[in-house]
Length: 370
Image 1 (cartoon, rainbow, N blue to C red):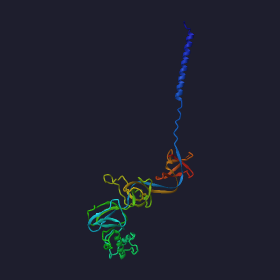
Image 2 (cartoon, rainbow, N blue to C red; image 1 turned 135 degrees about the vertical axis):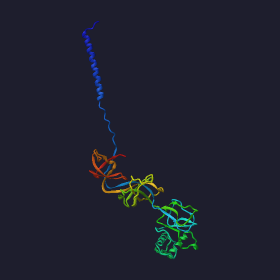
Image 3 (cartoon, rainbow, N blue to C red; image 1 turned 45 degrees about the horizontal axis):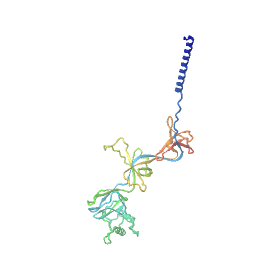
Image 4 (cartoon, rainbow, N blue to C red; image 1 turned 180 degrees about the vertical axis):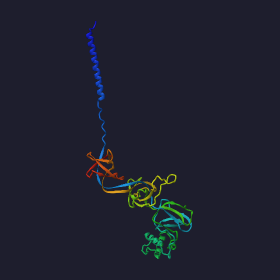
């Protein structure tokens, strides 16, 4: 059966139309997929707290590495007759006024306090001198003048001799052996109690005059730091210093007791001057360790020396500062608005920074949540 030309053309037309419709659907589907907008990825919310704007005093500190030790450096030199060293204290022990430093030929050499070294025997009839006054002051402090008959002066009197006899009685000397005198070398004067650092002579060895028996320090803890000469003018005696020490939970507050005046140049590994490093001066800080602290010597610490203080200023936590586009800083209030500020001194111990700008103590600023 033959088909008419009209039927063939109609079939071709419908076929072409079907292809056009299918192509259009495919193109529309592809365009829809390609042009479909991606859903916006929302940034995670940053948790924050608020902190008040406060007014008060702020202190900026110089942070320096330091060393915890003991103040002073003293030597105990034997001034008596030659003899055999029969007893010495242990390193680290503390010797107080009136106690034994060491023994020679079984005879004790005792510690007394004073700045003038011993240079002669103490006995009735000796010439007047400041060393006698120094001795009498010690005898009184030791409670050896209960009737208060000693006039603490430069004269060795009968009352002085009687006080020495009482002291001999404390040592266990029998009454008929008490002399009321102190031979040269039977006592040694140091400015304060002695913490023994090193024993320089062995028991059983022969001591001759001017032999060093012990070296030691005071019992007072100090921190020593080296401050660059460019910062020396910032540090004054009595300035507070914040000391951070390993094993002590809270920072300790010390006071500057001495600022060195002689600058030194750091040494390099080859024992030559390191010319690229600044010259420094030593600064000594008195600090009291809490009870129960370990007996540390030459321990590393961090020292924050107060270099500059300002009072009656506005402060915020340093974490509240935000960088401004184009430079500078700003803070965000609890309401969300931004306020431009100029930071000033920063206290590293409290984390607070001085600010000036459009803030008041009525404001709360945003800080990152902990």
